[in-house]
Length: 250
Ligand code: 13P
Image 1 (cartoon, rainbow, N blue to C red):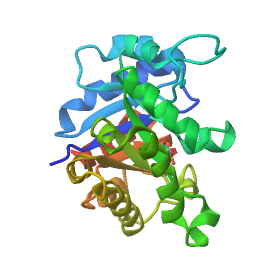
Image 2 (cartoon, protein in one colour):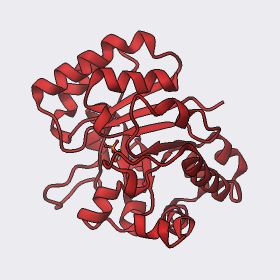
Image 3 (cartoon, rainbow, N blue to C red):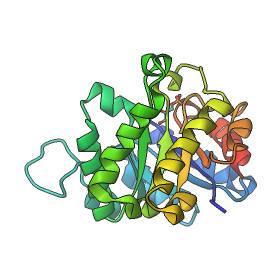
Image 4 (cartoon, rainbow, N blue to C red):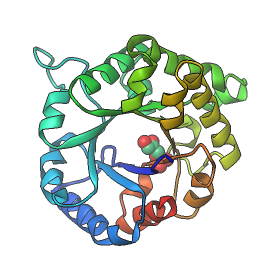
Protein backbone atom coordinates (compact mmCIF):
# COMPACT_ATOMS: atom_id res chain seq x y z
CA UNK A 1 0.00 0.00 0.00
CA UNK A 2 1.43 3.35 -1.03
CA UNK A 3 0.93 6.14 1.50
CA UNK A 4 -0.66 9.14 -0.21
CA UNK A 5 1.35 12.36 -0.29
CA UNK A 6 0.00 15.89 -0.64
CA UNK A 7 2.72 18.50 -1.24
CA UNK A 8 2.13 22.24 -1.46
CA UNK A 9 4.26 24.08 -4.00
CA UNK A 10 4.08 27.72 -2.95
CA UNK A 11 5.98 28.84 -6.07
CA UNK A 12 6.97 32.54 -5.91
CA UNK A 13 4.51 33.39 -3.14
CA UNK A 14 4.89 34.17 0.52
CA UNK A 15 6.44 36.39 3.12
CA UNK A 16 7.70 35.86 6.65
CA UNK A 17 4.21 36.61 7.95
CA UNK A 18 2.49 34.34 5.46
CA UNK A 19 4.89 31.49 6.21
CA UNK A 20 4.03 31.74 9.91
CA UNK A 21 0.31 31.99 9.30
CA UNK A 22 0.04 29.25 6.68
CA UNK A 23 2.18 26.71 8.50
CA UNK A 24 0.38 27.53 11.74
CA UNK A 25 -2.95 26.93 10.03
CA UNK A 26 -1.87 23.64 8.47
CA UNK A 27 -0.40 22.41 11.77
CA UNK A 28 -3.65 23.23 13.55
CA UNK A 29 -5.65 21.05 11.15
CA UNK A 30 -3.28 18.08 10.92
CA UNK A 31 -5.30 16.07 13.45
CA UNK A 32 -8.07 15.61 10.86
CA UNK A 33 -5.83 14.62 7.97
CA UNK A 34 -5.70 10.89 8.63
CA UNK A 35 -3.15 8.68 6.97
CA UNK A 36 -1.84 11.01 4.26
CA UNK A 37 1.66 12.43 4.36
CA UNK A 38 1.79 16.22 4.02
CA UNK A 39 4.64 18.43 2.78
CA UNK A 40 5.14 22.13 2.09
CA UNK A 41 7.61 23.65 -0.36
CA UNK A 42 8.11 27.37 0.38
CA UNK A 43 10.61 29.61 -1.43
CA UNK A 44 14.27 29.06 -0.39
CA UNK A 45 14.53 32.09 1.90
CA UNK A 46 11.67 30.90 4.12
CA UNK A 47 12.99 27.35 4.57
CA UNK A 48 14.88 27.94 7.85
CA UNK A 49 11.84 29.69 9.33
CA UNK A 50 9.59 26.88 8.09
CA UNK A 51 11.93 24.28 9.58
CA UNK A 52 11.47 25.84 13.01
CA UNK A 53 7.71 26.19 12.61
CA UNK A 54 7.36 22.53 11.57
CA UNK A 55 9.40 21.15 14.47
CA UNK A 56 7.56 18.40 16.30
CA UNK A 57 4.98 18.00 13.52
CA UNK A 58 4.71 15.26 10.90
CA UNK A 59 4.64 17.81 8.07
CA UNK A 60 7.67 17.49 5.82
CA UNK A 61 9.62 20.31 4.26
CA UNK A 62 10.63 20.55 0.62
CA UNK A 63 12.33 22.99 -1.73
CA UNK A 64 11.21 23.96 -5.21
CA UNK A 65 14.47 23.43 -7.10
CA UNK A 66 18.11 22.51 -6.52
CA UNK A 67 21.47 23.08 -8.18
CA UNK A 68 23.05 20.16 -10.03
CA UNK A 69 26.35 20.95 -8.23
CA UNK A 70 27.07 20.57 -4.50
CA UNK A 71 29.21 23.72 -4.05
CA UNK A 72 31.47 26.09 -5.93
CA UNK A 73 31.28 29.04 -8.30
CA UNK A 74 27.59 28.87 -9.23
CA UNK A 75 26.23 32.30 -8.33
CA UNK A 76 22.60 32.35 -7.29
CA UNK A 77 22.27 28.59 -6.89
CA UNK A 78 21.33 26.51 -3.82
CA UNK A 79 22.67 22.98 -3.33
CA UNK A 80 21.18 19.78 -1.98
CA UNK A 81 23.50 19.68 1.08
CA UNK A 82 22.33 23.23 1.94
CA UNK A 83 18.69 22.21 1.63
CA UNK A 84 19.29 19.11 3.71
CA UNK A 85 20.93 21.22 6.42
CA UNK A 86 17.85 23.45 6.74
CA UNK A 87 15.56 20.48 7.17
CA UNK A 88 14.35 19.63 3.68
CA UNK A 89 13.22 16.09 2.99
CA UNK A 90 11.91 16.68 -0.55
CA UNK A 91 12.92 18.82 -3.50
CA UNK A 92 10.92 19.43 -6.66
CA UNK A 93 12.94 18.96 -9.86
CA UNK A 94 11.86 19.59 -13.45
CA UNK A 95 8.76 21.64 -12.69
CA UNK A 96 7.27 22.82 -15.99
CA UNK A 97 7.87 26.45 -15.00
CA UNK A 98 11.58 25.69 -14.65
CA UNK A 99 11.58 23.82 -17.94
CA UNK A 100 9.68 26.47 -19.92
CA UNK A 101 10.83 29.75 -18.29
CA UNK A 102 14.36 28.97 -17.06
CA UNK A 103 15.65 26.53 -19.62
CA UNK A 104 15.82 23.37 -17.51
CA UNK A 105 16.42 20.66 -20.11
CA UNK A 106 15.74 16.94 -19.65
CA UNK A 107 19.49 16.46 -19.11
CA UNK A 108 19.77 19.21 -16.49
CA UNK A 109 16.70 17.85 -14.70
CA UNK A 110 18.36 14.43 -14.61
CA UNK A 111 21.51 15.96 -13.07
CA UNK A 112 19.39 17.82 -10.49
CA UNK A 113 17.59 14.58 -9.62
CA UNK A 114 20.96 12.90 -9.10
CA UNK A 115 22.31 15.83 -7.05
CA UNK A 116 19.21 15.77 -4.84
CA UNK A 117 19.69 12.10 -3.99
CA UNK A 118 23.46 12.54 -3.53
CA UNK A 119 22.59 15.18 -0.91
CA UNK A 120 20.15 12.90 0.90
CA UNK A 121 16.96 14.48 -0.46
CA UNK A 122 13.99 12.79 -2.08
CA UNK A 123 13.36 14.33 -5.51
CA UNK A 124 9.81 14.98 -6.71
CA UNK A 125 10.33 14.68 -10.46
CA UNK A 126 7.75 16.62 -12.48
CA UNK A 127 6.78 15.51 -15.97
CA UNK A 128 3.96 16.59 -18.25
CA UNK A 129 2.96 17.60 -21.74
CA UNK A 130 1.95 20.95 -23.27
CA UNK A 131 -1.57 21.45 -24.62
CA UNK A 132 -0.40 21.23 -28.24
CA UNK A 133 1.43 17.99 -27.46
CA UNK A 134 -1.74 16.48 -26.00
CA UNK A 135 -3.70 17.65 -29.04
CA UNK A 136 -1.09 16.07 -31.32
CA UNK A 137 -1.54 12.79 -29.43
CA UNK A 138 2.09 12.68 -28.26
CA UNK A 139 1.54 12.88 -24.48
CA UNK A 140 3.15 9.47 -23.86
CA UNK A 141 6.09 10.28 -26.11
CA UNK A 142 6.79 13.50 -24.19
CA UNK A 143 6.34 12.04 -20.72
CA UNK A 144 8.33 8.95 -21.73
CA UNK A 145 11.20 11.11 -22.97
CA UNK A 146 11.23 13.18 -19.75
CA UNK A 147 11.28 10.01 -17.64
CA UNK A 148 13.88 8.23 -19.76
CA UNK A 149 16.35 11.11 -19.45
CA UNK A 150 16.39 10.53 -15.68
CA UNK A 151 16.26 6.73 -15.89
CA UNK A 152 19.24 6.69 -18.23
CA UNK A 153 21.27 8.76 -15.78
CA UNK A 154 20.37 7.17 -12.43
CA UNK A 155 18.71 3.84 -13.25
CA UNK A 156 15.34 2.49 -12.15
CA UNK A 157 16.51 1.51 -8.65
CA UNK A 158 16.97 5.21 -7.80
CA UNK A 159 13.20 5.64 -8.08
CA UNK A 160 12.83 3.70 -4.83
CA UNK A 161 13.83 7.02 -3.17
CA UNK A 162 11.88 9.38 -5.40
CA UNK A 163 8.39 10.62 -6.19
CA UNK A 164 7.05 11.43 -9.65
CA UNK A 165 4.48 14.16 -10.28
CA UNK A 166 2.45 14.15 -13.47
CA UNK A 167 1.56 17.77 -14.18
CA UNK A 168 -0.05 18.38 -17.57
CA UNK A 169 1.12 21.91 -18.40
CA UNK A 170 -2.33 22.89 -19.72
CA UNK A 171 -3.83 22.16 -16.29
CA UNK A 172 -1.37 24.22 -14.23
CA UNK A 173 -2.88 27.41 -12.85
CA UNK A 174 -5.62 27.34 -15.50
CA UNK A 175 -8.55 25.97 -13.49
CA UNK A 176 -8.72 23.23 -16.13
CA UNK A 177 -8.03 19.94 -14.33
CA UNK A 178 -7.31 16.71 -16.16
CA UNK A 179 -10.25 14.36 -15.69
CA UNK A 180 -9.56 11.49 -13.29
CA UNK A 181 -9.51 9.13 -16.30
CA UNK A 182 -7.08 11.31 -18.28
CA UNK A 183 -4.73 11.55 -15.31
CA UNK A 184 -5.02 7.87 -14.40
CA UNK A 185 -4.11 6.84 -17.95
CA UNK A 186 -0.81 8.76 -17.81
CA UNK A 187 -0.07 7.52 -14.29
CA UNK A 188 -0.50 3.94 -15.52
CA UNK A 189 1.81 4.72 -18.44
CA UNK A 190 4.49 6.04 -16.05
CA UNK A 191 4.20 3.04 -13.71
CA UNK A 192 4.37 0.59 -16.61
CA UNK A 193 7.49 2.33 -17.95
CA UNK A 194 9.14 1.67 -14.58
CA UNK A 195 7.68 -1.82 -14.28
CA UNK A 196 9.45 -2.89 -17.45
CA UNK A 197 12.74 -2.12 -15.68
CA UNK A 198 12.00 -2.91 -12.03
CA UNK A 199 8.57 -4.23 -10.98
CA UNK A 200 9.20 -3.80 -7.25
CA UNK A 201 10.22 -0.17 -7.61
CA UNK A 202 7.26 0.47 -9.94
CA UNK A 203 4.77 -0.88 -7.40
CA UNK A 204 6.18 1.26 -4.59
CA UNK A 205 6.57 4.48 -6.59
CA UNK A 206 4.25 7.30 -5.59
CA UNK A 207 2.93 9.19 -8.60
CA UNK A 208 1.27 12.50 -7.72
CA UNK A 209 -1.09 14.47 -9.92
CA UNK A 210 -0.70 18.25 -10.22
CA UNK A 211 -2.68 20.88 -12.08
CA UNK A 212 -5.62 22.86 -10.66
CA UNK A 213 -6.26 20.42 -7.79
CA UNK A 214 -8.77 21.99 -5.39
CA UNK A 215 -10.75 20.91 -2.36
CA UNK A 216 -13.67 20.18 -4.65
CA UNK A 217 -11.95 17.85 -7.13
CA UNK A 218 -9.23 16.17 -5.05
CA UNK A 219 -11.27 13.20 -3.82
CA UNK A 220 -12.22 11.92 -7.28
CA UNK A 221 -8.62 12.25 -8.49
CA UNK A 222 -7.17 10.49 -5.43
CA UNK A 223 -9.73 7.69 -5.80
CA UNK A 224 -7.93 6.50 -8.94
CA UNK A 225 -5.79 3.42 -8.23
CA UNK A 226 -2.56 4.96 -9.58
CA UNK A 227 -2.94 8.51 -8.27
CA UNK A 228 -1.00 8.56 -5.02
CA UNK A 229 -1.64 12.14 -3.99
CA UNK A 230 -1.15 15.62 -5.37
CA UNK A 231 1.30 18.44 -5.98
CA UNK A 232 -0.72 21.55 -5.23
CA UNK A 233 -0.02 25.09 -6.39
CA UNK A 234 -2.61 27.82 -5.86
CA UNK A 235 -4.76 25.82 -3.48
CA UNK A 236 -1.79 25.23 -1.15
CA UNK A 237 -1.65 28.94 -0.23
CA UNK A 238 -4.72 28.79 1.98
CA UNK A 239 -4.64 26.48 4.98
CA UNK A 240 -8.33 25.54 4.84
CA UNK A 241 -8.30 24.66 1.15
CA UNK A 242 -5.01 22.77 1.46
CA UNK A 243 -6.29 20.81 4.47
CA UNK A 244 -9.47 19.88 2.56
CA UNK A 245 -7.20 18.35 -0.13
CA UNK A 246 -5.10 16.59 2.54
CA UNK A 247 -8.25 15.11 4.07
CA UNK A 248 -9.33 13.87 0.65
CA UNK A 249 -6.03 11.95 0.51
CA UNK A 250 -6.26 10.68 4.08
P1 13P B 1 -1.88 24.80 -9.59
O1 13P B 1 -2.38 23.87 -8.51
O2 13P B 1 -1.92 26.23 -9.20
O3 13P B 1 -2.55 24.52 -10.91
O4 13P B 1 -0.33 24.45 -9.80
C1 13P B 1 0.05 23.12 -9.95
C2 13P B 1 1.53 23.05 -9.86
O5 13P B 1 2.23 23.50 -10.75
C3 13P B 1 2.12 22.43 -8.68
O6 13P B 1 3.48 22.24 -8.84
